[in-house]
Length: 209
Image (cartoon, rainbow, N blue to C red; front, side, top):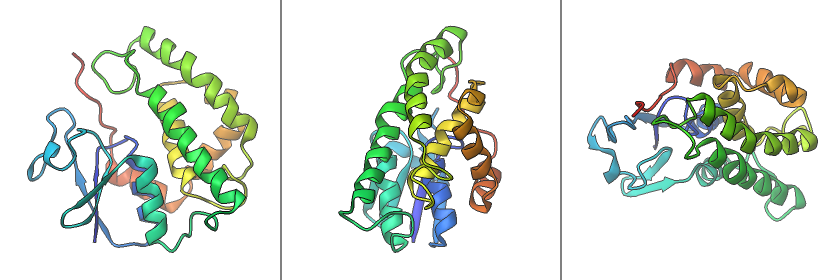
């Protein structure tokens, strides 16, 4: 049984969506990132990095980092959401997932904020937008459609959806990126996405300090 540690609306939503779509048996554990706790106590004993997601794959095995967790889930789901290992398409998928992790995800979670894990002041929102906008422009220019890498839904798509979902939460101009706007709407029509949004509820937000 897989066990996903998550906080609502964070990058953990990506593996949550993939698990929901895969049909794999799994459970979820909600983490309080303010207090670094979960139902059974100190979350730092589960993941000393103090963030989510964490995927428990056995009684003593805990995996971290969203990009890795997504690929692990795909491997357990008989590679439904990837391309054959070693092919050009496979390496393109890996390239995109790493781009999302390092160029988009990390720049949304920047030091330009007040307490909150996403920017929540006018200044911090502007500074983060300056970082993510050119990177989103790159994704838009190379977006194959209907999914990021073309006709096949891959484990990159839930991760990219987290980014477009954050854009909406921050009132960033998604309309400037018509392909990504269509992608975001298409993702929301998937049963796995609508179920996860309902399960997770209101997005987590760290207390301002």
